[in-house]
Image (cartoon, rainbow, N blue to C red):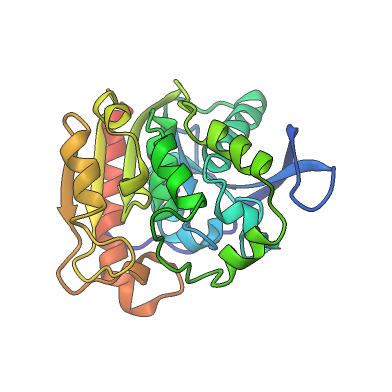
Length: 284
């Protein structure tokens, strides 16, 4: 598939009045980007970026979807996105991500036609997409991580996150996080999921993955040292009924799927083509 010309998305500075922002009592910002098709959309695909990234890092996917007739809707996850700055808590409260997509979808649907809805995500965004289909975090595993009973990998975007969180979190804070983490954040409007190098797999509840009913396509990268396929993509693929798995290539690295990574252009083109085909079939 030819790569479509770059387009400038519309930007909506939305908020979620139910959740406060991390650094003050203002409503949580949910900055939303819309890549529009040339005519009435055949459907809408929600997009979730990787940890520390931004919606525009998935512009390669959004533009391909818009060129194929879909409305692509991406968000900057507050505190976990570089355009607006990092907040340590946002790197640990993963469940805020699917809630962001639900807020964005509701706001967009109230303003315009969306058609059937799918969801796609990269890295931590892959978890986000799965969460909208019903994947849940395992409370026991998450508790072990936050209480440091099991080791966690260093966070490349926020290397001092553990020390910073320990300096200001109480046991009551952690108990609240553990309660929130295991809830079901499924959005029944999402009818299909496309996961690219999906993260969080070892911390997810096994039965929640087994109960996902929507079609799911999973893509991995053979040289991925951040979310290696055997522990991540293949866990999703082996547990979600009917899920398909494909590799973008043995030499493809994790960060190949960022728009600014020139070396990853061939892998992104391949995966964008696959995503368009997948959503054309599943959202028809």
